[in-house]
Image (spheres, rainbow over the protein chains, first blue to last red):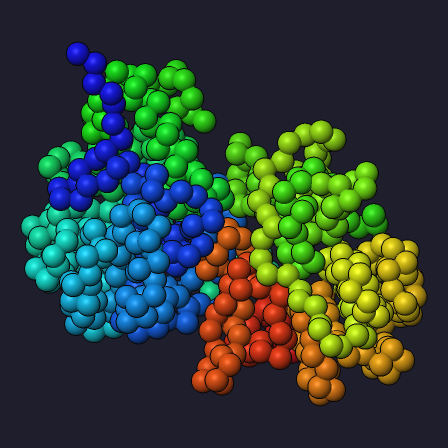
Length: 311
Length: 270
């Protein structure tokens, strides 16, 4: 009996046709994507992080290149949840890709408002909870840096949400404790870990704000390590790897390290087709390995000599 | 080409639809530590004749990506996206157009000059550079315009000075009705103030560091006043620009590295 391999993955209630998604902040407003790639071939896309009120964002320059990466800071520019629901969410859904909405608050109340606002919208496949912003309520620089606070917020979102909630756990020493607490509080999965807080020269060679987020291939080993650690600690919990994936091989490594799906960010900015190309490469890889689906890669060794896995 | 390099590529589909002010995104090799596409204004898009289907863009080999590009040999393949962005629009009723180009910013204006002339507009130009070597193709500028004024910072070609030194005279002499500019940011601010004071409509092409060039990432924003004057929005230079009405730029919100560095220098000296 020969069964054709499939790219489909199931993240505890979120069904994706491929394990490759576009990461938050790299999918535009839904209008741009249409001319750039066939989004029906994406596993999904994560919206830019949406706040309660419109955010005008950081002053420019917002991006600087660094070795194998970029340091960037948009200041979470977005039109606010009301406009997002009216204009962007329908446009994102019309691309044909499953939509995960990223939400960012500065207080518990804002997360509650954002989750509630999404409740009635059928276009939403899951919610990603951005936890790297400041906590204005408790006056702390990073909202999700503490176990109790992260689980309080994620728990509230999970109770209110009709769809699975994936906290994007910030990178740090207590990542494991935060991730475990979020899952106990009701998170159905985890996004690990996204861009890392970083600095940049000011002036013409860097960012206006001189602080930002490091993304791109430079952070891949850190993400890979976090994914492996958390998949061993929480083997039943779907993990979306996010950070540094540029090639099919990078994605295969993330899946082998224990990711259930992989988000592609910076590489999408460089080549909008890359998430689709990476998914194609994964299909070739699992076919070549005689596997049935990307899930079969979890815990597997990565075959280095496989054809075109390193495209 | 003095301080600049020019590349001509064969890309018939892009050449057919490219308009002045639009730009190209050139992919970088994937075995280097610099990642992002480099974005360059279209200098020439040939649709007819022996060069049909070709595009030309101009760059200065001042950073690793552009230096890599400068090392390409004939017949190599490049990864090119385009045409990107919203280009210049042409005046319907007005005829006398003054084009201001500084450094390699002039590259996109020569393409614009051709399109304006084809629409029976009068084209005059001011072309500027720091030195002789950074004045972009002055001979071609002369060919494309009715009158041209060339200025350099050191006086090595044309008049000594800046665009602003000759702008009032050129506007008088050519009876300017519309200004198009592709200049550095400090010059742009002065040009915008001048045009506003004289009530001359203007369009400017913004030179802003881009990441994706396709509107996905919101890294290349310019603060533009809302039409109802209720504030401003950070609009993307890549899809909502790179051509903007300079009268709508909110300069106080557009903090430029040049000015930041200048302030720091002044502070350290002061």
